[in-house]
Amino acid sequence: GVCMDEKTLTELKDRLLYLKREIQQRIKDNNDRVRSLESGDEGDFSNSISYKDLTYNLIEKDRAQLIEIEEALYRMENNTYGICERCKEPIEIERLKAKPTAKYCAKCKHIIESHR
Image (cartoon, rainbow, N blue to C red):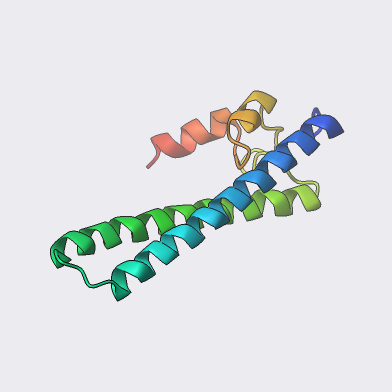
């Protein structure tokens, strides 16, 4: 965005890349866990089923977050990062620091969420 300096942008990018690695690792761990549940000889199968569902949900959540991170990094490459997709105004720096994948400024986010 206009009011974002290189230093802040670099900080946010580093954080996104760090989160990306963390999430990819977590997806991998959860996938391994599911696999070991599937191959394991489960005493209480009903128990492992719900655990598996839970793990799948975590993987799905992480995948969704990974997409958000990829999109944010893509916007950085295209110099559209930190600009609200709805009103095209710069997103508040504080907001981006709290949620580096933010696509909307606080005002637009509020409007969008109240219309759901």
